[in-house]
Image: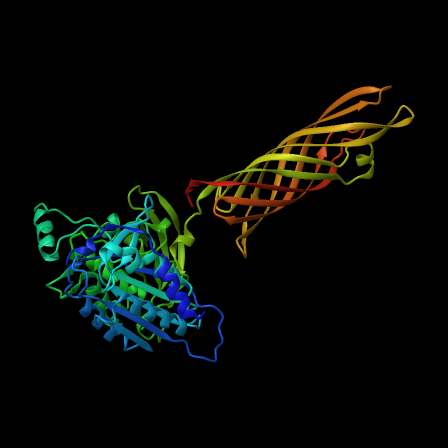
Length: 558
């Protein structure tokens, strides 16, 4: 089966069964845009990477339950014209025949087959109605409406957004942007300008619009509007509102925030986000869902032919609502990007609502630098409840032969990460171990049973390694109660002893899925206790393994 057929088959089957209803049955109301950023990997340098775009605009629909849109085709044609200046291939679908479901899926498959180099850039843009549906008893699902989509057969004739995104994720290109200028709010009226006028009229005289960052949502998707809101067309602008400002930003004179000669997806979205929010008086709040590693690699227009000004940015959920202060002056709130001058600066990241400072320190910046601000935040503390087994081996033959045999045991423990500060690991452990040995006495070698119960507290430090592994060396101190029982029939005796224990460990922490932690450990240390006339320390080595669940405890201070 060819890649094209796989894409078509995947999209065809990724559909929920029952249509609920959507704003897309109303003229002038549309909805979200999604983005997936990823860094380019190591690639063959012999071929030139390509930049390709599929732009879809649909004004007319065969099912009259979906009212006509005014500017979707114009949005698509305008964006296509802009992209043709810098993209290698731009395909615009805007006629009734081109915008049927089968034609759109085939075009997506074509792009997927051509974008076979990890260095390629792919952009998908859809300006159309969207709608909501779900399986019986399931959660709501999002759909794009094609020219031949039927409202009563949405699952069979619409394009599922989640299925589309999974198909895009499987395209080999690592630079992918999907913009959905549609909405899925299930609300709205046929004429946006009337709706907008009524909403604006309802604002109290002299009221102040709160800053966009105060009402934005902690999501990491480029969206034309927040979920449950309406993406709007404007007769005054002659476009979908978000798309109008997105198009403006493609002019490097407007959207090139860092001055490097190019406009990236994040720069265009940040500009359109702010302008859309202001234009609609807060009724439409574009949001960002993206994971940008290093500098945003999705160049939409222009050519990054020179180093840009330093940029501080973050689109991560953990950065939502943080105020960025540079040299004592508030420069903006996250998510988004902020251009700052070169040189050394005092930087602070402050919770805008609570005023809590999460980071404060000096940062040195030069041309071309980009700083993902969440990497400066103190990582959230978490607590892991652990259970496992262990093995201990006394190193000295005299100790092992007369007093302390090798033992197997079980342990329960707690590991607290990033507490009391970044990188530290606080360890609390309780353990039992036991074994059997032989000791000389009464002129013969007597067998005995050995049991020990102990408790220790330790402190380690964790370093990140490849493949989601962490290496965590640590030191610990504790106490142990030892019990030895002789019972040979002729001789019976019970002995007990208290000792002080100290040790070191080298742990490897692995979290294969969120919240599940595996920790194998190499142990070493000694015990100070009266074994005969020798108080020690009596050295030992050992191995331990534990598994447990992690639970967040929230941020600590930097």
